[in-house]
Amino acid sequence: MEPCNMEPTARQKAAMTWLCTGCGYPKPGTGAVDVRIQQSDPGNVALSFVFGNGIAIARKAFLAGLGEKVIRSDLFLGRVFGPDGNLLPNWTTYRGRRRVIIRGTKNVSYRRCSECERDVYFSMGRRYIYPPPPGDTTVLQSDLYGLVIPPELEEHLQPNNWSGLHVERLPVVAASRDGLPPLSNF
Image (cartoon, rainbow, N blue to C red):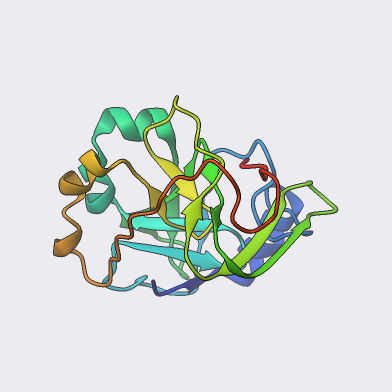
């Protein structure tokens, strides 16, 4: 991923509305978010993110592989604007209606945000998902700015056709491997 930077004035406005200043992620209950970035082109990638605010961005053509029904039911989509304020028509922000924390086995750290009470997590080592995600969603957003999709959707996204896209199969486990209890996934 090639992270982008939010335009400073837009960041100030976000901090007054949807951005939690305690953890740097959108406040709970936030849906679609529009962003104005400092770059005029986020790069030749399928997915990226806006540094310091928990917002993922994607090429619209890439997300189209999920299908309109899945997009409508599982994702909130917003607009991406360049430094001049003009819409970047090939890009969209995305936020999952459900979010999952990708856990690991080494160098684990965790805190609860004092502002919004979100669980903020970091780890390295072998990645996994715990607890199992709810069954009412097909696509989830990961806390690492990626998408968690079922194997049957992978071929629709054609990951080999996108520069820099990495697909990792993660085990879903019944017990935590990092010693922590289930963490909130809002």
